[in-house]
Image (tube, rainbow, N blue to C red; front, side, top):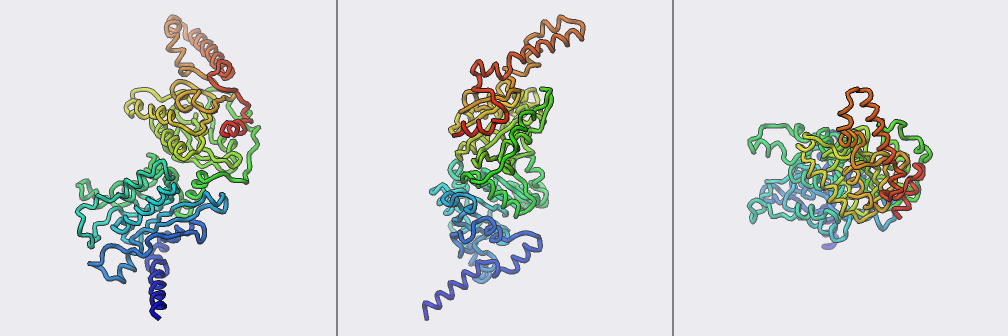
Amino acid sequence: MEEKKHFTEFIERLNKTTDNFRENAKNKRHKLNLRTARENLFDLIDKDSFLEYGAFAVAAQKSRKSQEELLMETSGDGIITGFCKINSNIIDNESTNAVAIVYDYSVLAGTQGYFHHMKLDRICEKAKKYKLPIVIFTEGGGGRPGDTDITTSIAGLHVPTFALWGGLTGRCLRIAINNGFCFAGNAALFGCADIRIATQNSWIGMAGPAMIEGGGLGSYSPKEIGPSKINEKNGVIDLVAKDEAEATDFAKKILSYFQGDLVDWEVEDQTQLKDIMPKNRKWSYPVRNIINIISDKDTFIELKRLYGKSIVAGLIRIEGKAFGLMASDSQHLGGAIDSESADKASSFIELCNFQKLPIISLVDTPGFMVGPDSEEGGAVRRMSALFKVGSQINIPLITIFLRKGYGLGAQALAGGSFHQPVYSAAWPTGEFGAMGLEGAIKLGFKKELDEINDEKKKEELFNKLVDQLYEKGKAIEAAAHLEIDAVIDPAETRSVILKAAR
């Protein structure tokens, strides 16, 4: 009878960790068209794959709440953690092990308490040991001052959480998802993640309203702090989703690129690439059209679209194999690399390098963005970082010059040197030089041009010199002088990339 009693107590306590026990909290979420923490968890992971840690934890507040209140109001101390599988329906089973961490905003606004930190630290240690990817839902208000049972701590700043989380960089892929409010410690976890997804209705900031007001900086509502429309433009958010369901789908798809290859794939007609470039070399074009043709159908996922817009960065597949991809966007600054796009490219290269994902670089750039305004934005420091990260690349980098490959900027997108990639090739439209042709003529032939008073004749000489320099720097000439490895048929781009990557 005693054993049966213990088992009954166990089942009762287990049931109190579920949404059904906390009906009011569940209904409150649903009335806001939001999901519970466990609903997000079960949408993320493969069925029956979750191995939970610390489900029976409650907040360290026994001195101020009854046991029944703690079970009802502080389930799991506001966080769900455990091992799981994700994407085993499409990826080889052995590579789908993962860690799931889900903040529960219905528990004390998703704040971080004593046992909460213990749970988070333990699962991070296990993720680090087994080199497992982590998907984390970060909705919550940061540190919690109300854990009255803790009497041996003053500020509570000796917790290992943030050092542990930061220390996973380069070892465990971290994908963060946020919906709703995410402030202070929760925001620090979100910001440290390798890939950051947020819903349109997210507000993410390093301090919430109380901390801002307490610091004498004014009174603000939570929705005035770090809205998605701002954080998407400043690079905090990599991908914006309409709701939690779409954000979860994005996370699963992105994770799959780092888990392995797909067997089934479809491809566009590659002969479209033969005539895709504009006839006039001065005209811009939508580079995403090229990316979508080169990629397997429906596999291109773009990151940070509204930040550093002169470089497109994202994930693609070619014949099911995953790649990181960067591409110059001639429709923004003519493809010139400004400070923001340099930051974007540097962090993207580091991510791919850490996670052993081959990189494709599609280059069409006149070089780095120059001028006093650019320098005021820290251009020297931010652009030079591309050479540092390029020198550390130890995975295949394949560089394809679509058109312009000028100056230090072109070198930066090729890992720092045209010979740094495992293979560097150009389309027949490729053109090369130490700097943009027009600028090179204005600088190198300034005396000759200044001596001509007739504007029409000056323009004729200028155009003639540009044409001569263009002929000298054409892709075929660069390949003949071994500055690049080859000139290729655009329709063969996919096969060239695959051969180089293998």
